[in-house]
Length: 310
Image (cartoon, rainbow, N blue to C red; front, side, top):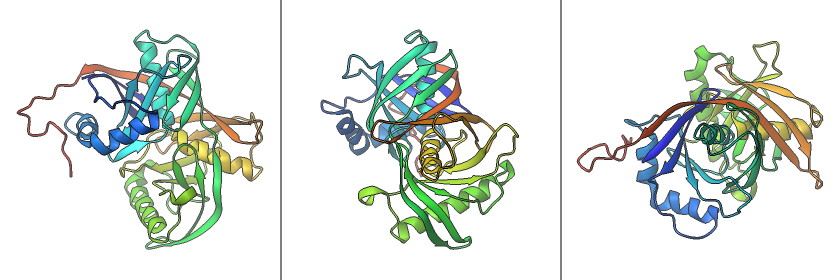
Protein backbone atom coordinates (compact mmCIF):
# COMPACT_ATOMS: atom_id res chain seq x y z
CA UNK A 1 0.00 0.00 0.00
CA UNK A 2 1.53 3.31 -1.11
CA UNK A 3 1.17 6.14 1.40
CA UNK A 4 2.59 9.58 1.95
CA UNK A 5 2.78 11.07 5.44
CA UNK A 6 2.74 14.70 6.52
CA UNK A 7 2.03 16.83 9.54
CA UNK A 8 -0.01 20.02 9.71
CA UNK A 9 0.95 22.09 12.72
CA UNK A 10 2.21 18.88 14.28
CA UNK A 11 -0.95 16.83 13.55
CA UNK A 12 -0.21 13.82 11.28
CA UNK A 13 -1.99 12.80 8.08
CA UNK A 14 -1.44 9.58 6.14
CA UNK A 15 -2.69 9.80 2.56
CA UNK A 16 -3.42 6.38 1.02
CA UNK A 17 -2.44 6.71 -2.63
CA UNK A 18 -3.04 3.10 -3.71
CA UNK A 19 -3.87 -0.28 -2.25
CA UNK A 20 -7.03 0.74 -0.42
CA UNK A 21 -10.28 -1.27 -0.41
CA UNK A 22 -12.80 -1.33 -3.25
CA UNK A 23 -15.76 0.70 -1.94
CA UNK A 24 -17.97 0.15 -4.97
CA UNK A 25 -20.27 2.72 -6.52
CA UNK A 26 -22.48 5.42 -5.06
CA UNK A 27 -22.00 8.83 -3.53
CA UNK A 28 -18.86 9.63 -1.60
CA UNK A 29 -20.95 9.65 1.59
CA UNK A 30 -22.20 6.14 0.75
CA UNK A 31 -18.68 4.90 0.11
CA UNK A 32 -17.47 6.50 3.35
CA UNK A 33 -20.22 4.66 5.23
CA UNK A 34 -19.15 1.43 3.52
CA UNK A 35 -15.54 2.04 4.56
CA UNK A 36 -16.58 2.33 8.19
CA UNK A 37 -19.02 -0.58 8.15
CA UNK A 38 -17.04 -3.10 6.14
CA UNK A 39 -13.36 -2.20 6.37
CA UNK A 40 -12.58 -1.39 10.00
CA UNK A 41 -9.55 -3.67 9.93
CA UNK A 42 -8.17 -1.69 7.02
CA UNK A 43 -8.52 1.58 8.92
CA UNK A 44 -6.92 0.12 12.03
CA UNK A 45 -4.06 -1.50 10.12
CA UNK A 46 -3.16 1.80 8.45
CA UNK A 47 -3.35 4.03 11.51
CA UNK A 48 -2.63 2.00 14.63
CA UNK A 49 0.66 0.65 15.92
CA UNK A 50 2.95 -0.83 14.68
CA UNK A 51 2.52 1.29 11.50
CA UNK A 52 0.97 4.38 13.05
CA UNK A 53 -0.30 5.81 16.32
CA UNK A 54 -3.49 7.14 17.94
CA UNK A 55 -3.17 10.73 16.70
CA UNK A 56 -2.82 9.81 13.02
CA UNK A 57 -5.63 10.62 10.58
CA UNK A 58 -6.06 8.71 7.33
CA UNK A 59 -7.02 10.25 4.00
CA UNK A 60 -8.16 7.69 1.43
CA UNK A 61 -7.61 9.25 -1.98
CA UNK A 62 -10.17 8.38 -4.67
CA UNK A 63 -10.79 9.60 -8.22
CA UNK A 64 -13.16 12.59 -8.15
CA UNK A 65 -16.69 12.25 -9.53
CA UNK A 66 -16.64 15.92 -10.53
CA UNK A 67 -14.02 16.60 -13.24
CA UNK A 68 -13.61 20.08 -11.78
CA UNK A 69 -12.30 18.61 -8.53
CA UNK A 70 -8.64 17.73 -7.97
CA UNK A 71 -9.41 14.77 -5.70
CA UNK A 72 -12.01 12.93 -3.70
CA UNK A 73 -11.04 12.11 -0.11
CA UNK A 74 -12.51 10.09 2.76
CA UNK A 75 -11.00 11.06 6.12
CA UNK A 76 -10.92 8.64 9.03
CA UNK A 77 -9.27 8.05 12.37
CA UNK A 78 -8.85 4.89 14.41
CA UNK A 79 -12.50 4.79 15.54
CA UNK A 80 -14.27 5.75 12.32
CA UNK A 81 -14.94 8.32 9.66
CA UNK A 82 -14.49 12.06 9.95
CA UNK A 83 -16.93 14.02 7.82
CA UNK A 84 -14.33 16.68 7.12
CA UNK A 85 -10.81 17.30 8.42
CA UNK A 86 -9.11 20.65 8.01
CA UNK A 87 -5.57 19.66 8.92
CA UNK A 88 -5.76 16.58 6.71
CA UNK A 89 -7.02 18.65 3.76
CA UNK A 90 -4.01 20.92 4.14
CA UNK A 91 -1.76 17.86 4.45
CA UNK A 92 -3.34 16.19 1.42
CA UNK A 93 -2.80 19.20 -0.85
CA UNK A 94 0.81 19.62 0.29
CA UNK A 95 1.39 15.89 -0.27
CA UNK A 96 -0.09 16.01 -3.78
CA UNK A 97 2.06 19.06 -4.51
CA UNK A 98 5.12 17.17 -3.28
CA UNK A 99 4.26 14.37 -5.72
CA UNK A 100 3.89 16.83 -8.60
CA UNK A 101 0.14 16.19 -8.93
CA UNK A 102 -0.88 19.74 -7.97
CA UNK A 103 0.61 23.16 -8.58
CA UNK A 104 -0.06 26.33 -6.57
CA UNK A 105 -3.50 27.74 -7.20
CA UNK A 106 -7.13 27.11 -6.23
CA UNK A 107 -8.36 23.52 -6.10
CA UNK A 108 -11.65 21.81 -5.24
CA UNK A 109 -11.80 18.67 -3.11
CA UNK A 110 -14.76 16.31 -2.70
CA UNK A 111 -15.43 15.19 0.89
CA UNK A 112 -18.33 13.16 2.31
CA UNK A 113 -19.91 16.35 3.73
CA UNK A 114 -19.53 18.43 0.59
CA UNK A 115 -17.03 20.05 -1.74
CA UNK A 116 -14.43 22.36 -0.27
CA UNK A 117 -12.11 24.78 -2.01
CA UNK A 118 -8.50 25.33 -1.06
CA UNK A 119 -5.73 27.64 -2.16
CA UNK A 120 -2.35 25.96 -2.45
CA UNK A 121 -0.40 29.12 -1.66
CA UNK A 122 3.04 27.52 -1.78
CA UNK A 123 4.59 24.07 -1.49
CA UNK A 124 3.86 24.05 2.25
CA UNK A 125 1.07 26.57 2.85
CA UNK A 126 -2.64 26.03 2.18
CA UNK A 127 -5.82 27.95 2.94
CA UNK A 128 -8.96 25.80 3.10
CA UNK A 129 -12.42 27.26 2.53
CA UNK A 130 -14.44 24.88 4.66
CA UNK A 131 -18.07 23.81 4.51
CA UNK A 132 -20.66 26.22 5.92
CA UNK A 133 -20.39 26.20 9.72
CA UNK A 134 -22.93 27.17 12.34
CA UNK A 135 -23.78 27.22 16.02
CA UNK A 136 -26.49 24.77 16.96
CA UNK A 137 -26.91 25.66 20.66
CA UNK A 138 -25.57 28.44 22.86
CA UNK A 139 -24.48 28.49 26.52
CA UNK A 140 -25.27 24.90 27.43
CA UNK A 141 -24.48 24.25 31.11
CA UNK A 142 -23.31 20.81 32.17
CA UNK A 143 -22.44 19.30 35.51
CA UNK A 144 -19.28 17.30 34.92
CA UNK A 145 -17.96 14.96 37.63
CA UNK A 146 -14.65 16.26 38.93
CA UNK A 147 -14.96 19.53 37.03
CA UNK A 148 -18.17 21.11 38.28
CA UNK A 149 -20.29 23.25 35.98
CA UNK A 150 -18.99 23.75 32.45
CA UNK A 151 -20.64 26.12 29.96
CA UNK A 152 -20.18 25.91 26.22
CA UNK A 153 -21.69 25.98 22.75
CA UNK A 154 -22.56 23.18 20.35
CA UNK A 155 -21.39 23.95 16.81
CA UNK A 156 -20.76 22.30 13.45
CA UNK A 157 -17.58 22.89 11.49
CA UNK A 158 -17.55 19.68 9.45
CA UNK A 159 -17.72 17.63 12.68
CA UNK A 160 -19.74 18.21 15.87
CA UNK A 161 -18.05 20.13 18.69
CA UNK A 162 -18.75 21.24 22.22
CA UNK A 163 -16.70 24.42 22.70
CA UNK A 164 -16.18 25.80 26.18
CA UNK A 165 -16.06 29.49 26.97
CA UNK A 166 -13.27 28.93 29.49
CA UNK A 167 -10.95 26.08 30.35
CA UNK A 168 -11.02 24.36 33.76
CA UNK A 169 -7.28 23.62 33.49
CA UNK A 170 -4.48 25.89 32.29
CA UNK A 171 -3.87 25.48 28.54
CA UNK A 172 -0.24 24.48 28.91
CA UNK A 173 1.61 21.54 27.35
CA UNK A 174 2.47 20.25 30.80
CA UNK A 175 -1.26 19.70 31.40
CA UNK A 176 -2.01 17.61 28.29
CA UNK A 177 -2.83 14.47 30.31
CA UNK A 178 -5.11 16.41 32.69
CA UNK A 179 -6.79 18.20 29.78
CA UNK A 180 -7.37 14.88 28.02
CA UNK A 181 -9.00 13.38 31.12
CA UNK A 182 -11.16 16.48 31.59
CA UNK A 183 -12.28 16.48 27.95
CA UNK A 184 -13.17 12.77 28.13
CA UNK A 185 -15.22 13.42 31.28
CA UNK A 186 -16.97 16.31 29.56
CA UNK A 187 -17.73 14.22 26.48
CA UNK A 188 -19.15 11.44 28.66
CA UNK A 189 -21.35 14.04 30.39
CA UNK A 190 -22.62 15.27 27.01
CA UNK A 191 -23.63 11.77 26.04
CA UNK A 192 -25.10 10.93 29.44
CA UNK A 193 -27.15 14.15 29.59
CA UNK A 194 -28.43 13.89 26.03
CA UNK A 195 -26.72 16.96 24.60
CA UNK A 196 -26.40 16.42 20.84
CA UNK A 197 -25.93 18.14 17.54
CA UNK A 198 -28.66 18.50 14.93
CA UNK A 199 -31.03 15.53 14.54
CA UNK A 200 -29.54 13.84 17.58
CA UNK A 201 -26.00 13.67 16.16
CA UNK A 202 -23.42 12.57 18.73
CA UNK A 203 -20.91 15.23 19.71
CA UNK A 204 -17.54 13.49 19.45
CA UNK A 205 -15.13 16.46 19.66
CA UNK A 206 -14.51 18.64 22.73
CA UNK A 207 -12.71 21.98 22.47
CA UNK A 208 -11.41 23.89 25.48
CA UNK A 209 -10.71 27.54 24.72
CA UNK A 210 -8.61 30.14 26.51
CA UNK A 211 -6.18 33.00 26.22
CA UNK A 212 -3.15 32.65 23.92
CA UNK A 213 0.44 32.51 25.11
CA UNK A 214 1.82 34.34 22.08
CA UNK A 215 1.15 38.10 21.74
CA UNK A 216 0.53 37.53 18.02
CA UNK A 217 -2.44 35.19 18.65
CA UNK A 218 -6.01 35.90 19.74
CA UNK A 219 -6.96 32.46 21.09
CA UNK A 220 -5.64 29.07 22.17
CA UNK A 221 -7.33 25.69 22.32
CA UNK A 222 -7.12 22.07 23.31
CA UNK A 223 -9.15 19.68 21.15
CA UNK A 224 -10.03 16.09 22.03
CA UNK A 225 -10.61 13.95 18.94
CA UNK A 226 -13.07 11.01 18.76
CA UNK A 227 -10.46 8.32 19.41
CA UNK A 228 -9.26 10.02 22.61
CA UNK A 229 -6.09 11.57 21.16
CA UNK A 230 -5.59 15.32 21.30
CA UNK A 231 -5.15 17.45 18.20
CA UNK A 232 -1.61 18.79 17.89
CA UNK A 233 -2.83 21.46 15.49
CA UNK A 234 -5.48 24.10 16.33
CA UNK A 235 -7.99 21.75 14.56
CA UNK A 236 -9.44 22.91 11.27
CA UNK A 237 -13.04 21.82 11.84
CA UNK A 238 -12.85 22.95 15.48
CA UNK A 239 -11.57 26.34 14.37
CA UNK A 240 -14.44 26.49 11.88
CA UNK A 241 -16.94 25.78 14.66
CA UNK A 242 -15.28 28.48 16.77
CA UNK A 243 -15.52 31.00 13.92
CA UNK A 244 -19.24 30.29 13.68
CA UNK A 245 -19.64 31.06 17.40
CA UNK A 246 -17.50 34.21 17.24
CA UNK A 247 -19.48 35.42 14.24
CA UNK A 248 -22.86 34.80 15.89
CA UNK A 249 -21.74 36.62 19.04
CA UNK A 250 -20.55 39.63 17.01
CA UNK A 251 -16.99 39.19 18.27
CA UNK A 252 -15.30 38.83 14.88
CA UNK A 253 -16.16 40.66 11.67
CA UNK A 254 -15.96 38.98 8.26
CA UNK A 255 -12.50 38.94 6.64
CA UNK A 256 -10.80 39.74 9.95
CA UNK A 257 -7.81 37.48 10.63
CA UNK A 258 -7.85 35.61 13.94
CA UNK A 259 -4.72 33.65 14.94
CA UNK A 260 -5.52 30.47 16.83
CA UNK A 261 -2.86 28.54 18.79
CA UNK A 262 -2.88 24.83 19.48
CA UNK A 263 -1.84 23.29 22.79
CA UNK A 264 1.68 22.78 21.37
CA UNK A 265 1.88 26.34 20.02
CA UNK A 266 1.30 25.76 16.29
CA UNK A 267 -1.05 28.25 14.64
CA UNK A 268 -3.76 28.70 12.02
CA UNK A 269 -4.79 32.01 10.52
CA UNK A 270 -8.61 32.03 10.63
CA UNK A 271 -11.18 34.22 8.93
CA UNK A 272 -14.64 33.87 7.45
CA UNK A 273 -17.06 35.31 4.95
CA UNK A 274 -20.85 35.31 4.87
CA UNK A 275 -22.46 33.46 1.97
CA UNK A 276 -25.39 34.93 0.06
CA UNK A 277 -27.61 32.94 2.43
CA UNK A 278 -25.86 34.40 5.48
CA UNK A 279 -23.88 31.23 6.28
CA UNK A 280 -20.44 31.38 7.90
CA UNK A 281 -17.86 30.11 5.40
CA UNK A 282 -14.58 29.58 7.32
CA UNK A 283 -11.12 29.98 5.86
CA UNK A 284 -8.34 28.02 7.61
CA UNK A 285 -4.75 28.77 6.63
CA UNK A 286 -1.81 26.71 7.86
CA UNK A 287 1.36 24.86 6.92
CA UNK A 288 2.09 21.18 6.36
CA UNK A 289 5.30 19.27 5.71
CA UNK A 290 5.79 15.87 4.11
CA UNK A 291 7.53 13.45 6.47
CA UNK A 292 7.56 10.15 4.54
CA UNK A 293 6.81 8.53 1.20
CA UNK A 294 6.45 4.84 1.91
CA UNK A 295 5.03 1.45 1.05
CA UNK A 296 3.19 -0.32 3.86
CA UNK A 297 3.62 -4.09 3.89
CA UNK A 298 0.99 -6.49 5.28
CA UNK A 299 2.49 -9.96 5.64
CA UNK A 300 -0.18 -12.66 5.98
CA UNK A 301 1.77 -14.29 8.82
CA UNK A 302 2.12 -11.02 10.78
CA UNK A 303 0.05 -11.38 14.00
CA UNK A 304 -0.39 -7.59 14.07
CA UNK A 305 -1.23 -7.24 10.39
CA UNK A 306 -4.43 -5.35 11.25
CA UNK A 307 -2.82 -3.20 13.93
CA UNK A 308 -2.62 -3.45 17.69
CA UNK A 309 -6.22 -2.99 18.75
CA UNK A 310 -7.20 -2.56 22.40
